[in-house]
Image (cartoon, rainbow, N blue to C red; front, side):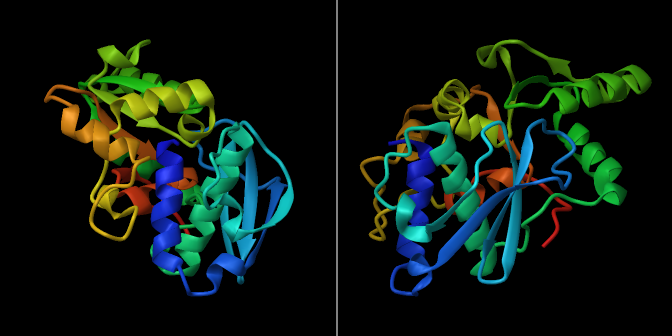
Length: 241
């Protein structure tokens, strides 16, 4: 079980008996622009009149029930992408979040400025397909030395690990995320009893981690539902409905 499976379990408990679990979701690739920081293909998820978008290196098309992901091991990148897509659109439908899509171009500079302010002067590891963000950080640092960040090639050398959707979808990138994930405010909610479920990797790691470990910042609309369920730190200040 992974931290994605844990997030799914939390959602399952929250919507149990609502009828949402029997609803149909439609997931399709799209030509719309996604988060400007991320590479990958945008996929659109539709449910009950709500739409959410995410960028992924593992695009696909399917129609499925929400409940497909319940008790699923989510072993493949495509399955984890699908699970996160459904987490996003159901979280939007249930008003756990109002964010479903990337921000518009008019908000890109403000979003980047806020992100740089959070990581300026720190060593940063990018865990996901974030070559666009990498170039943005280099450019900002060259123009404004006070905004310089220090990209590093190994997560263990970082002060901050920035995680995009592929940091949950890709097997190797997910392993990095799980290694440093501390669990969030909702990490103990996975069995509706106040105790962490057996598969709750995040909560287990949280108890064992010492100070000085890298901070994780999840970024973009792809991880919205995951962050809502896990109570994780999420940077997507201008995401649209």
